[in-house]
Amino acid sequence: MSETGSRNSATQKQAKTWLTPEQIEHIRDACLSDSFATYLQDRNETLIVLLADTGLRVSELVALNWEYLDLDAEPGELYLPSEIQKGNPGASYLDLADESRRQLRRYQNRVWKGSKALFPSRQSDRMTDRSVRNVVTRAAEEAGVRPYRIEGGRGESHEVSPHTFRHSIAFRMIRRENKRLEDVMLRLRHANLQTTDEVYGHFRRR
Image 1 (cartoon, helix red, strand yellow):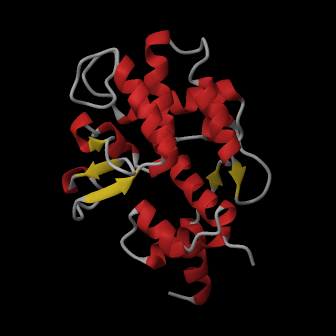
Image 2 (cartoon, rainbow, N blue to C red):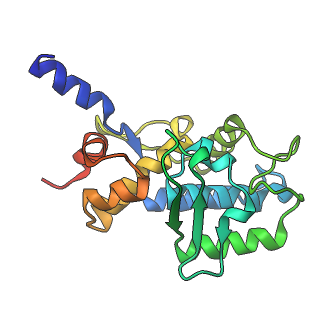
Image 3 (tube, one colour):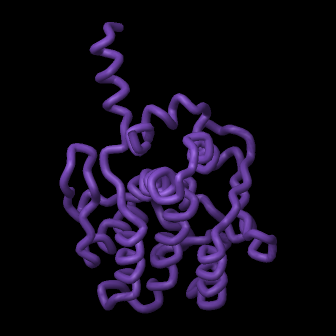
């Protein structure tokens, strides 16, 4: 591959849109608006909080069961079996932020449907990838949040997806918390540092 081709390939992998922590809070607030049925508000807010903290892929999020959570641990802990992760790597454990643990406890005390799945839907015991995407986009539109674009300027609310939160974690860790790319790699469970650099290296201050 030519040098130009290599550069273009690397550029294509870069995170194209992301949200700031403040924008994520607006989306979280929107989950509690009249735009959503009252009994679904806690569920929707919790999935936003968990996406923003853990960077789970949407397929992983919908596969979560209550038994994977240990909210009594210090810090709270989320277990990810190998079979629900992309590429079937080894099982993983993710520390949960204090706010995520508090939100999960609130949700647990108010859960509206008995199911082993952490996030059930109206129609079944488990939300689908599509239903999560619909909740995320609808909440972003309700909040009027427009994601930041790598080209500069802002995108549109309907462009916000579950994967946008994964990019947003990298933005927060690198730009707000001065974390290393190695820290981002571990949080997002990339196979190697090269992948992290290709996708999020442009977030580093030059």
